[in-house]
Length: 214
Image (cartoon, rainbow, N blue to C red; front, side, top):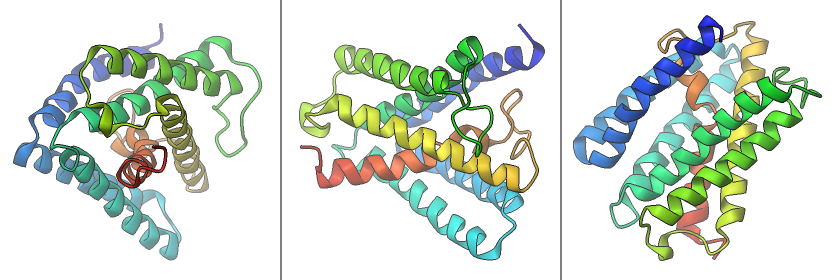
């Protein structure tokens, strides 16, 4: 096990309980947490985006994305369970892609993000569906708050998360940087870790609030 992977695992062990605490606690503590994350992500996006128009559009999109995080936490019976579900899908998507990709390797998925493989993509879908189903089966969530087509919802959120990851990787390659920052040991910047999430949260909120899948 290389040093970078050890740092990645240890950072996750430390960070995940903190993130869970803020999501579950809610109130002004959660709002303060996402505000700090928003400022960091905007700062990191400003560093990697060289085109003025794209930079501005990115700022608008990031603001909208974090607004939907707030709404996911507070709109659905003011419960944390929906936001936690979407977060779990994104995290398991990231983990599945990383470990399956490293373990099985195989053909590359796209030139936009050379580290992505078909094996990683399949692993992302598999792990996100597995962990999300366990979460839904053993932690109470009002059936009215999630789509009847749960598997379709999980698959789509995982797909959007992967697409967002690839898009941010593309922007990093254009800027000739590996990571958006160094705030998280073994992971890089905060944007490196939430690149898929900032696309998955708005998508999830639109799907759930409009009840398109119901």
